[in-house]
Length: 156
Length: 271
Image 1: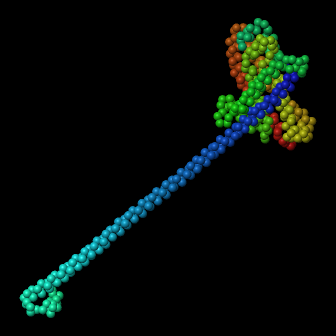
Image 2: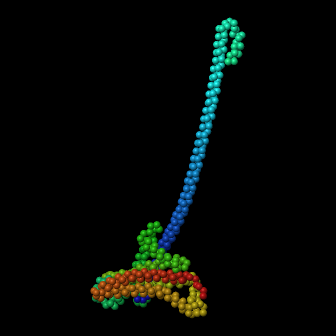
Image 3: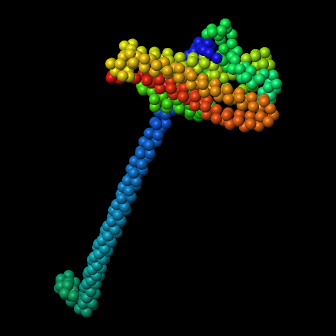
């Protein structure tokens, strides 16, 4: 139970053991743990960043939707306005066309009346001449008295 | 534990039994030049176990899916790292492996104490080995091998960090300033020499006493059949308590190593 040369053997063993454990366990393991720590920190940071970006994107998306809704409402309002305008125009057109048609019809009717009157006048002249001829046979020259008769008929 | 002791009790007396257990299996011509084969065998065996664990774990460890053994080792490594971070100023690539090795190796050597005191020696008897001390840390050679290695590192780093003159100044002007140089030299020398001695003797004393108490408890059952019950009860209690002691001693040795080397790494403060 005293210090012996075993001491030297143990010191050498100790030195080798320290070297071995340093090389094969401590260095790789602390390295790995540091790497892992860094990776976890990076991952958490990335997750945080992703969350932030997602929030931003969501915000943007809501804004887009809001804008789109506003635009749609605007377009709808415009379309309604335009539709009302078109209907209004069509109504005006129809009214104008109707009036035009009425005017044209009236004109035609007047023309027809006029034409009927003319033909009646002509026929009356003819009939009158014929009747007068029959009445004053031979005494009246159709040519000589034609103008006179026409004048009479004109006064009808 | 009990049966082996009982069979032996008829032979040697209690004193002989204990003396027999305290005898190293050694070769050499006495004095310093003696090799304690049992101490060397068990410490090398445990060093081999540590190397095997370190090598296989170092090869197959993964960062993503750590499993059983790797978790345990990571916990130990992280624990040692934390101690170093708390105590050690600056950084030194040697201090980590050194502290880890001391902690694990001393723990394993101490843990041999938990095996029944007669188990391995009795097995040795069967193959013709008559003396065997199983716990390497109950051998002063082992504890002082560690303590002196640490001491050598303390001196080396003192000189490296403070410079030869700085180290000399520490002896001359510490702790009482320049007017008490002779006292300073004595005080600092005692302070420095006390470091390895306290390191080596603390571990040795604790483990030796623990082993001795295990032997005394083992003798209880050997004395008579009535001793069997107290032997089992006391042996259990002491073994459970000893789990604390062996861990604590390994931890203290590691911690003091870090503290002493940390002190060696500090620049000298002028008085």
